[in-house]
Length: 219
Image (tube, rainbow, N blue to C red; front, side, top):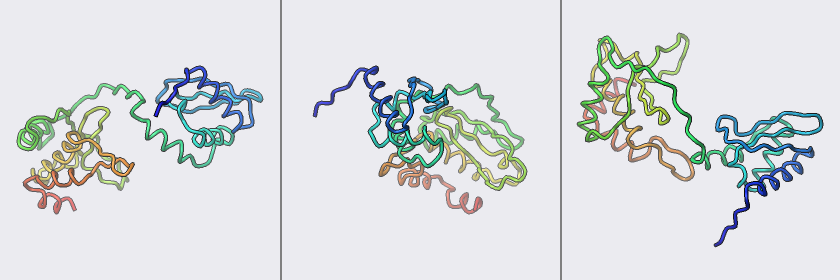
């Protein structure tokens, strides 16, 4: 199958006209590379001043119609837009992470030392993520997160709630091992959905020597 790609300026004019039909308003369209704000609109008299990320130049009619409804009413559900952004997220540049100050030494546990032991034992030294203690949980916060991994910054954060004399080392190791698996395996796309805890992930997680004992302690 041969696909013809129109020059950007022609595509932009087609999109602008389609948005005018969908909104019933005159459109001034500016294409951007702003990955933070993919769609924005300002009312300029009887005209809508629209800023649209370039990824929408290849959107189909259904997505453009939903964009038009969003521009016209500035409210309502936008499932087609969200799905389109998700499917084209790889085309958006990653944000440059801010400089992170890492804190690996706690009062009872040294995260870097534990990370090194686990990296050698389970990953053959191939996990390159950084690790740090996270911020203390705000009072009144119900959700208890023991660890997290950010693919954007490639940093593992461990809850300082674990840095206690009463917390067994195998529990800290289990949480770090879990987040290292996220860094090592990444996310998988299964049936069109992003899956962070795939079967492969679960199987490897259970390979941690004190897995059952650690899970029981955390429960």
